Image (tube, rainbow, N blue to C red; front, top):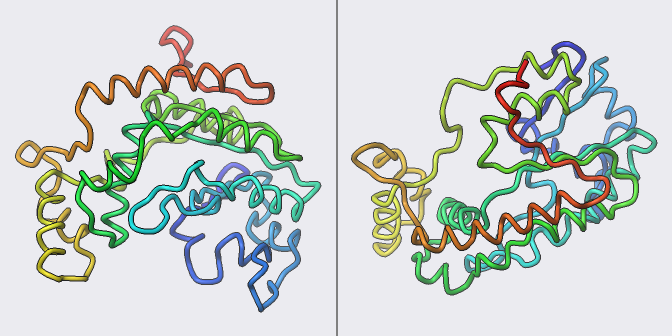
Length: 271
């Protein structure tokens, strides 16, 4: 979309064949066909005359999971070099970073759902044995990204605060006056997770030898609602323990030079 001087592209565009950032900007060393446009011509084509270009694609920094349902550690190890390559390619255009983080245990629970959506059908006990939520270190990840030469402004927020912080995020991303006009989409969840019933059905179908997109089908049959409770990978006590470590990580991020943590504004200051 283009409105008030900005254009935004998300996964629906950037995951199409030939439209990944790697493909459009020639960032993949294995790519045999050169991009049709130079990097700056490509930026101009995407921006279409707008002053700000927003590229929202979490997969650009690398995939989260490895083989057999194992989450890579540290998180997104290739992210710094990928971002550095993009910054170098489009220089001297300023590149700002925006990052939402999440309670490590809750993040790992979401990763388990994505593992099922991706076709690796392992049980929750196996997933927990292969992955330790304590390895999710957002402070380390942010520090690695902040160290990339050429990074402009860097904004971080808690996913748990997203609804209350959205307006501030948009104002930092799109300029103050424009960002204040952005409204949240009506749907409560764009990508709903799995209910406990959907997880059970997914694993049962996998045991029967079915190979189609099981988790997506099961989610449609057993959506999260009053009848089908959301799947929980960890007990409440584990989530609470993780929350304490999460708070310590956020304090470290807050203290980093060149990083701004966005907090929900006080109601008295909202405008």
